Image (cartoon, rainbow over all chains, first blue to last red; front, side):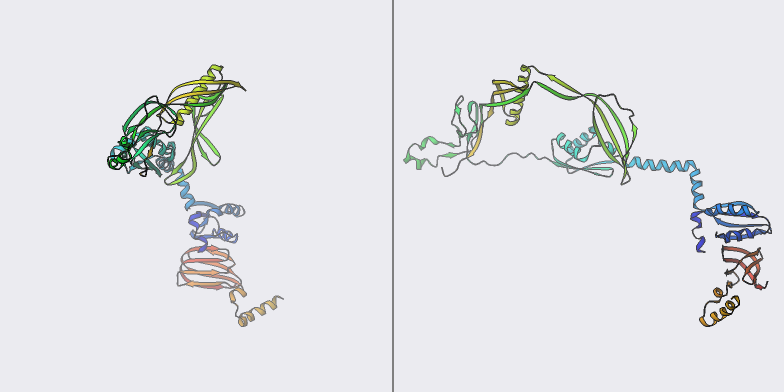
Length: 407
Length: 93
């Protein structure tokens, strides 16, 4: 019986043979090497039996030589079941639809979890995420990468010190750490304030300590601006010094000494510049990518832009928890133009000055104010203007220097 | 030559204990109660009906009588018969 065990899987048919001595037809079959089973004689000239689906072509050949009438009366097995199933369009459609539904649902963001932060900040984060398009119901492949979201969140929500963004399937989990603003409560040791740069004092605000300089004084780096020692006047006399020592009071000098400082800066500004800019015209294209093949889904044709800046955003499509080898690609084509600008010498000089100021401001920090600038020297060389600038800045030049007890 | 072969075969069976169905090309018939008859080494089907099965063998026929016969399986030299068996007869040519 081993021979017919898999017949259901491969499919079999029952044939009815009509004619003189119909059982001999099955004898022909078996001598040709085919397997026949369940042979029954229904009447003297009619006999039926089962043969395999794949043997049917040999049966047809055999019957050319013999003179029997063959009739297929039953079909059984998996291939016929499958064929019947495929023939039922609505069932097939249902299966297909459910597959697409699962595909659809696996690519939608279902939940955004925020942990580790108090309610109010959680609210803020979720609002920020909403405006960035991260909310339940959003397409996963249209989201930015967790890294980008992380950076953007930290930038947009100032209360956050750090946020960890992790994508687990259809869930976004965010773990935030709140920034705790700590008041500077450290008791400061006795100290002086000294100058860090040479300059002319413009404004003084001393909150603690004894000022040693006055407005409009010229100071060099290292000069003492505010002393942390109060009651110093009594140290003139050596004898009294011993007695007065107890009265000598040491404090942490504190204050702001704004001075006018100056810098000499060299900049070069080209007379001819070129830069590219986006015109704002853009077109979006969507592709499905499998391997190297890209199937356009939306956005056909190429826009007639002269220069194109492409932005490609690729993300895999998921089925349940598995990533399919199919990727969804969103390409944004931006029109860009190149502009070449010829500048006059004056314009170039102005641009150079602006650039120098910007660079200096970056170097000095936000507290420094650039007061004035003066062009000391100006030459044109190889289409570039070389400038030597003198810039006046108002900035805080005070720096704390601890008082050593031994002095 | 043929005479010699036929003379040597019974001797092979007797002294070397070789199975007789193979050496003499005889049918091997296995009967399970009244239910099944399993015939190997037959030379083809002669007649088959609900009540009778006749198979060609080396010398003559095997005739099986009974009722409600179904050929459960047919392979080139084997047949499995199912039904109610009443007799198995050897019919010489």
